[in-house]
Length: 333
Ligand code: G3I
Image (cartoon, rainbow, N blue to C red; front, side, top):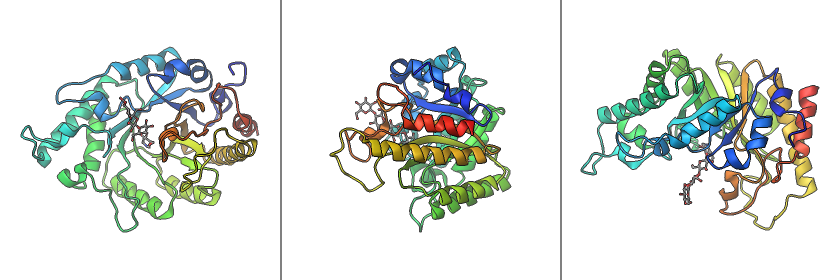
């Protein structure tokens, strides 16, 4: 594995190559990560509930370790994520008596969280997913219902960016979402970011998660989406790329090993994706996988708990798969 061409060097002229890591995988996948990747994102360790489980009480130990890992291996770090409806401690939205907090208190808590975290990692985390997944998947709804939205109102989004910018003016600030190429959702993300930008909100990029599979999205959808997002004049990061061997609605549990045919299809998908990313490399400045090798993926628990998946260019023994070799071909072509 470590004697083959480094992925991040192969794509060095185009974008950085990242992996989501956690406190375990920086050990179990250390050689693979340090060889092929020059960027990391914390899979869970920098989320609100992990860093700030109680008011005025921060737990930075695990996040700090990931930062040291990145330093040791000369990697850049993307920060994930500051304001999200998920993995945010209950206390944030509650008063001591258990009732819901008021807008001012919640904004203060948001600001103090963002300030503390960004100031601590100033100069060490170059880009942050400031706001994550606030656009609704439902056609009739613009924003996803959440406590942030309920209590603060729509401007919780712009406030988060403002707080982040004043805490670390050099950090690149991103809005990050999934189903980013579904046309109706794409248009909502596009218009939300457009109006943030027009209103002077300090936003520098859009994170396209790219949790994809062998069928979805079509290349046409990707191209249309990239055109649309690129027209906003912001950077684009591919933030959470993986290619599931199951379609979205497939709940089968009888596949215990990936077949050659599936791995071939996956390699073809990776080839097509990276060809497009290369075409758009003037706006796509980073491509991060949501993991690194098939021995660990969040997809093993989603959408069917315990079902295996094999979404990466490296297998469970960290050996290159067909996908890896196709990626090298793309980089060289
Ligand atoms: O840490 C606890 C452990 O103590 C407990 O025993 C175990 C029991 O289930 O749960 C562990 O926490 C899990 C955590 O991952 C760490 O493994 C949570 O249940 C589980 O929900 C959590 O899942 C994470 C998920 O975000 C939460 O929404 C995944 O690891 C993580 O990959 C995933 O990442 C998200 C991005 O942040 C945003 N975009 C989508 C992406 C995939 O869902």
